[in-house]
Length: 468
Image 1 (cartoon, rainbow, N blue to C red):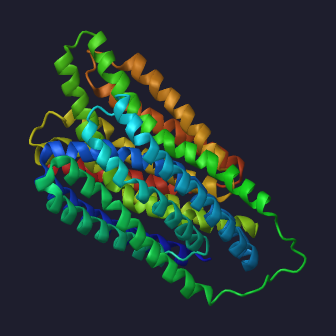
Image 2 (tube, one colour):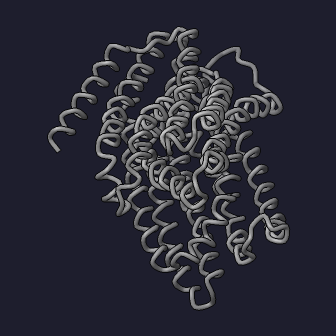
Image 3 (cartoon, rainbow, N blue to C red):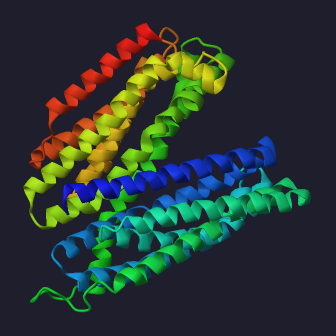
């Protein structure tokens, strides 16, 4: 697959991601106005449980499917690719059903044990059980088609899913609101079920459409048929570290919640002031880090099968070319964004939050935009060349560095600044280790080009400071 096709696929996913974000923003506004704070609170207590289950079922195995299928198709072994899909579909269906039953049976326990404080969340949890199953199966179809480098099905399904979800959520919330907030929140949560069904229907249609183009028989002579046990074992061995790395992302965010307020209080800051400072960091600065995720996440999603294909063909030149292109695009998007966020910290805080008191937190968190996206891209490259466990290990090292930085640096003298820099240290450590591993694998980057982009972003930042 040439670089132009790789960039085209990334662009398709990026445009789809932008549309999904726009539709999701409309949904958030409508739902907030309809349910108000209390109803949104009930919904938000249930939805993270659903996302946690999806991080286990619908992240690791799909990445594994995409990697293995890309390697098989690179060698024109379509028979084995389809066989891997059939085995993975059975595996994902079983996992999805098991997790759906787990959520259904554990919903009452989470309420009764006090793990979830408000008993009204029970209805929303039950409404999400079916969504876990459909979303897990959907992820299998999507990753298989991405392994074939077909990104259009993923883009179309994402847009369709979001549109159906928003429509059903708002309609059910409005219809059930007279019966009580708990039922309205459950109706909003149930929107994830038709979302999964709609996406699954779209992907199945694409699957049968594309299947006519694939050869019916194996194209490589002498290739022995892999056993079901062997295929399942390969999928699980690749999926486990990917799933663990994905679970570590919310763990990283939780570090600030547990450590930063306590360190501020122990250094002499009053409880209410520490809570306020933490709100500036976690509630105002860190959400801005996600603003530039769409291009880089799309780039990483298309990068994994592209790298897997070149790695299977042992095409070192193409591997390095794609890695360098991905890194250049990442820097073109994120370095100006990081500079802009740091320079415009005050105006951004005032515009978005109605106060300029989050200026310090936003300014010192700006660098993390670039570092986080670099971590995503280098993780995608490592996964594509089969080093799936390395990003998880490096992320653990980064988390340990962040814990140490928060514990040692955060105090009353430096306010929230050092806590913000602990996030930068976290991602910098993970990125640095990822790059070291890539260099050992013979994958180098064009640092001169990256330095030019960084200089241009810095120059623009200085001009903005004096010209604003």
